[in-house]
Image 1: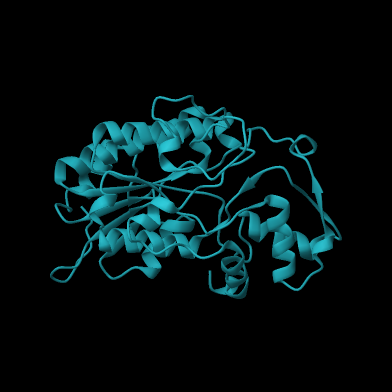
Image 2 (image 1 turned 45 degrees about the vertical axis):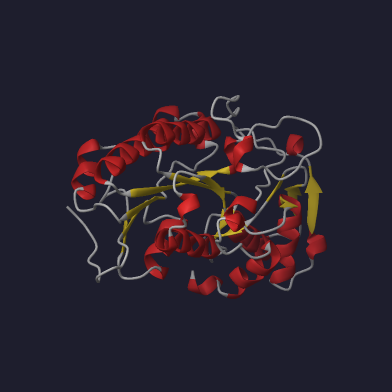
Length: 303
């Protein structure tokens, strides 16, 4: 059994997926009452592991589930593992959390949305009907499946969807880190310009989740919220801004289409998320994506 110590009145927060982009930051930036555990310490797909760890938590405590199978392309061929981590694991957490009176906050994704045609506008939480059509790719389907399992098992759980998360760290594998590496190693880089979303700096997302967990606005219990940096761009636009942020010529980034850069898993053409529900709950809106990106590049060595 593992549980964080805390002072009187301080919310104890358990973070799953504690070695990932967001989970690691929650542990590093949160108060001493935060315990961030990786999969070797808490395997959310193992009932015994979940039960053992959550036995140390009870009413007033919070679990933030950042554990996920996020390899979008790999999920297409490893459906069993993606399902175990993205669907079965969240169900186990929800079942044990509600039994112990623990508030579960589950991190989800823009990939749960299905393009419906017409003029695009930022997706609102209610636009993703639980009984609506499933996404095309395995990653999106399993993340939506996890949302459904959580809502069925624990009506008090809160789902927070985000998108295009990055750290920008040297040697990282996220998009911003990759663009920084390509800027140093290639004269030009081609990036798709027909997929639009909201880049989200992992530091900003971690701070937002900590605010949610520690302030616990009453309207957010059992709700679905969206948390991304404000504004939107295409991957091409994001890549050009990365080059600009490091002092390179953004003209070295050239646009291409999704058809010219095929991947095993389909990507949403438009997945901008509306943050209105987040703000309406009294939570601090995340800053504009360009400001966050430039900050990420300045502090890349600290990530």
